Image 1 (tube, rainbow, N blue to C red):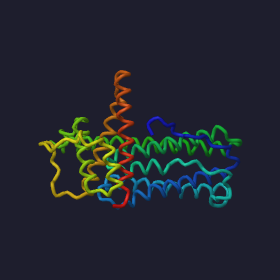
Image 2 (image 1 turned 90 degrees about the horizontal axis):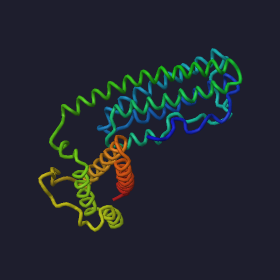
Image 3 (image 1 turned 180 degrees about the horizontal axis):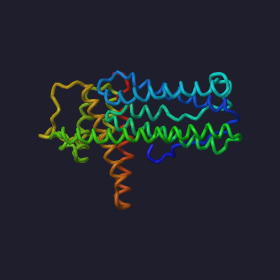
Image 4 (image 1 turned 120 degrees about the vertical axis):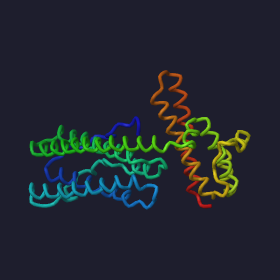
Length: 293
């Protein structure tokens, strides 16, 4: 998501009348409410801070859909209809973006608000396109109104994003622990991850064991236990899997942040190489974790 344009494709054709415009807006609001609602209903207790954000977003999109329906009835005497659509409305809240957040072990309220900001920025660009290509003044005026609404929403969501960042930063500083300090080094985190993968492989079925061991070579790089290892000895395989995935994700974030903050070309290239390797490893670990056994 870092380098992709907000709107990957332009609307395929001009909107011909006000009924079509409201049908598009209504379909997009309903889809957004459905996508946000799915995350608002997520059952994982660890997802609670993020779920609260999506409960708010779900409600906002439902209210938006109701407002669009009311405006359509006032404009043409009936509710928006799928029959008015000549092309599939562009997806302003892609499922894959939400899936990335839902599956992340590091998901935060800040990240959820940031994604919502991105979605409303995308909506602003979309309706700007519609207004620019409108063939009639009525459609243009309505599209401009929807663009302004998206812009206002974006500003409100940015405020929530800032508040979430400050709250998260305060919590992180207050809860700073020795274990977190120890893991601040990517080198140490790599070492701990290798050990987790090796432990995981010992209790995994044959095919999975081979896949896991391929991620650490012949095992000669796996460190022996030392004082930095605070893992409980009674932990389950599930505990090991979750910790390995969390550490793999942390490393990917570290390398991506390093690439973003690189001050010269050599450091940028190294960070990009490490990030690419780490992301590929994370994807493979997630795939193995999803297998039965």
